[in-house]
Image 1 (spheres, rainbow, N blue to C red):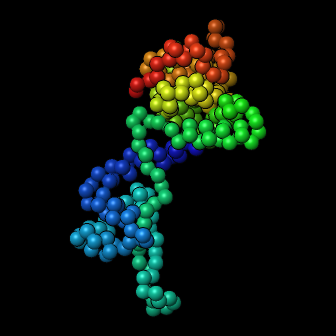
Image 2: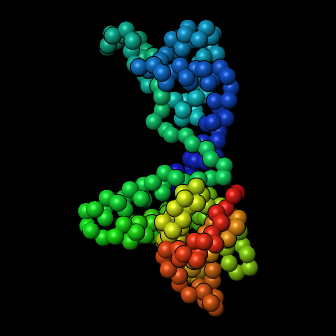
Image 3: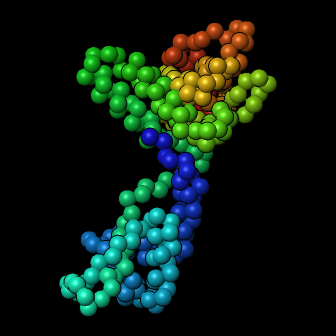
Length: 248
């Protein structure tokens, strides 16, 4: 449910950068507004470009997965002598999004929607379902990783930083939502990271709520640290009042 980090955010930045070239952007806009796939000749004619220029930019857009390439015979003929299929371009199904700092609002939306739907179907409280789903997803993300906790957190935009024996998170992937719906979103985030630690087999660390200026609301502390009992999955009123979301 996160953007596949093998292809995102660096790949997305490259795709967005490709559209900064004016001719390429005009070609992209033209192709995606057509009802069907567009050939190089059609695109060149529509925009008054040389065929070679149009072909170069269309192929660059395809290389960035912004356009898909299909092959069709436009003559209507089939069989021997029908000629080679034409190379055509159409809008790709790939979604491109770049956010600095990195955000993952689609993830939060999907988790919240799943929680509401399962709660309605089972009668279990929405918040309990949300925590369960978030924990499950965190474990899944960890299971797809062959790296350590710092690499995993970095990969998904948390910007982890060692602070003594603890790990603080310099970025919240749910920043805007966390400001408006602190208890719900921070509780979800807490269980997501608890699931990730469990999936990584990180028994020496525990995720706890520790809101503070400039940091994500969750902090990873040594499990044996004195004064660090496991906290409530939600955010207490006192913690909510003292919470200042990261502005990074």
